[in-house]
Figure 1 (tube, rainbow, N blue to C red):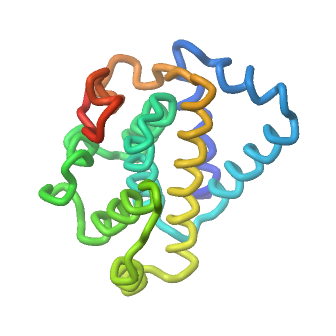
Figure 2: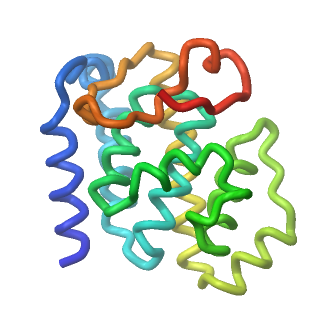
Length: 189
């Protein structure tokens, strides 16, 4: 039932799109095998239900922020709100270490997203060990796969110039301000 809810939430979020709806499909249709592989991986992540959805979403949103993929951020923050994240929690992702909005485990998952999103991606053994004190190996695998996929998705979308779809509909959106896009700052719109 939880998986069906996640699929439904994704469909509702995509249906809310107000612009640029066909940017990504317009590119993917040119390479059907890549489109199929993308769809398969997206579904595999949706059907993976061992790790808490909230942890996967927080890590994915942070990864999207770090790749500055406006398309990914647009969808991710809308998905986060649909899962009950407050605007305060979403804004706090920028400086999560100093925030009371997150649990210790949430902060660890966000830190994993930061470390996996760097180039080169070097994850400390200490972080991995600390995560495994709270999560099973299967759960950590799901969260890491979500982060890795968000990085792949963000970099592909950046390379193709995929624009945001405005799924946020005028509410808070975590898309970085133009001056922050070229630097490491994660300013919020």
